[in-house]
Length: 412
Picture 1 (tube, one colour):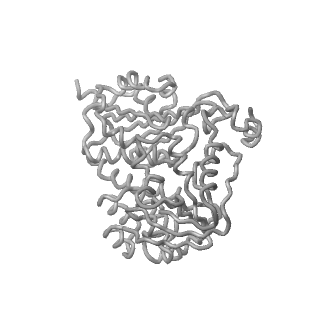
Picture 2 (tube, one colour):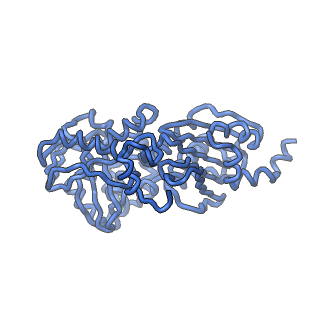
Picture 3 (spheres, helix red, strand yellow):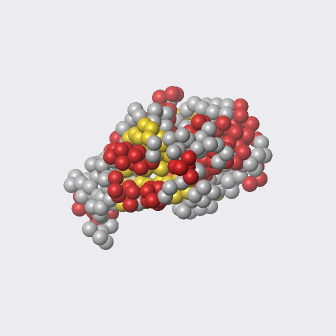
């Protein structure tokens, strides 16, 4: 159906004929959740606790929208589950996650990225990094009305309303180290690493960077959420990478695999200098490939010097837990991270599920093989896409199939 826009497709489909090939209509799923909120708020005023959940847009940069997401009339720990990837993983399916995220109101205000103190004065950015949900009272300029957007790919987000007034009514609990770093004149990189090593979860650190709470005080900026996610993943990954280059190779080929939210992953670690390859495969008539029946492949390679051929947020999210794992076992390896996106993944939910799925499958006991060839032939059958297509799209597998290394002769 070349040349047809999503709007044309959606108008013909009306959510019932599945013309895009997805199992469910992401537009209708989102609108149903928004209608539920609309029925449960009677005016422009509402209160509730942010889980916490902060979203900074990038459109219009340097004047961007900052949205504190709040489920109306939900208070205390009940609010936490509305935006909690660490609690969602393995327990919540795609439908439930979409419903939770779409059941909040994004209390939206426009801010210049060079003025993070405006958020600080209202405690909006402090609320976003609290260890517990934070109560708030909001007055919107108008009662938000659900709208249908004809793009078919809309990330499930909260129903947005422009803020007239917002007041944080309970005290954010930050933890002593984060509170100290907020007032310190320290580099953002140093603070991110220190907080993570001290046990702060990555989502709190992302909110802190995005909300303009980290970095040299005079140079602090509000950072769009999408940029902040990739920046934190990259900072931490590069930190662990420095250590791994000094470790000995692993003794055999390890294979980990697992599935969540219609995404299948295989991670292969093999004796080699540290280099990484990420391949993701999208089935035809799927989320990002509605107009083709062919499988589409996308690849990122990172060489032993840490240079990648393409910056991709999904790859950077998957890379971090693998580098953490290698640092933890004090070994160096070549790394293959392969992802198959099934048609059941009908709406994007962000890179958190990539990061957490890879992290969790690395906690399992790996299958071990004497060679990468044996591992590939045996394990890539886990995917529904034939093995030969993964090999054809892999630089590393094609190289390994025709190249012998010194370590091979040393094993004789």
